[in-house]
Image 1 (cartoon, rainbow over the protein chains, first blue to last red):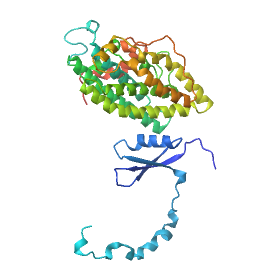
Image 2: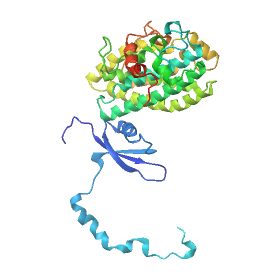
Image 3: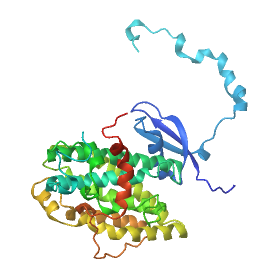
Image 4: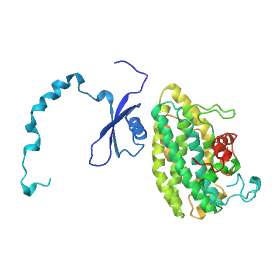
Amino acid sequence: MTMSDEWPLWEVFVRPKAGLDHRHCGSLHAADAKMALELAREVYTRRQEGVSLWVVRSSDITASDPGDKDMYFDPMADKVYRHPTFYQLPDAVDHM
Amino acid sequence: MSAGSESGVAASQRPPVAPAVHYVLRYADTCLVHAQRLGEWCGHAPVLEEDIALANLALDLLGQARSLLTRAGEIEGHGRDENRLAYWRDEHEFFNLTLAELPLRRPSGQAAGGDFADTVVRNLLLSCWLHEAWRGLQSSCDDDLAAIAAKAVKESRYHREHAAGWVVRLGDGSDESHRRMAAALDRAWPYTAEMFARDTVEAVAEAGGLGPARDTLRTAWLAAVRPVLAEATLAMPEETPFVSTGSAGVHSEHLGYLLAEMQVLQRRHPGGRW
């Protein structure tokens, strides 16, 4: 592992309000988790973007390789039977 | 609005402010001056994210200052609004703690400035003090002051946490950061006695239910500061007999430069708006 002068990078996720999901909104450098949370509050909630913050060390995120996009995601294209659009709901319960 | 004087009375002849107004201005001016000092870091802080954090702190403090200045002007009843009070008072009419006006980022007079440790230490000492003051002011007999305090206490709670985090990281950090933090703490400590100095202004405010006399804040302040210093492996400096006098209107040589920069635009273009 290479040593760096830079603080570790953290990814920041904000949840706009209760019931919704945390969305990725950016990243920042911080020395530790608590500082990352405080700085996320400073940098990413200036315009009342949300009520909850997650910070994750960027090195803890495993991402799919863009080069594998075809292999990973194309096979789903011909499995439309997985979508719930083919079901006819009886009128009695058709208000979902 | 005419420049500089009210109804033809020269500045040196203006009567002193009423104790209630003086009491509120002590907090208003401390917030204003500290905000001004923190603003000096904007664009120059050692870390990008901390630069934004300091600006946010300064904006919180400025908001507190504006509310308090407005209220002080109303209590005074001479028609002075927040702008009049911020931009048209001279040094001897400002009642901030001397600690707030000492240099921070930039040199002032003969003082070097520029050590981030001073900012970190001052943020801790002042935010803990303001937090105790806000807590007490929430039960002020003046409803507006109580409302201002109720909002500000949330901000000061965060300021305290933020400051404490830095004090611990730098104090219990490398040899160099620890050395600088200890030196900064030694520089700042003598100016903390003023935070708890009891005088007539404080006594009158306490008696009238306007707010707590600041000597009553000391115990809670120490209870907040002591554990942070301990975790930061910093020794609490000795008490000395020195008491600074900014809150009585007698300031160090630094306030003049600060006010000159803060007030020049308004004074050069009175009533200017954009």
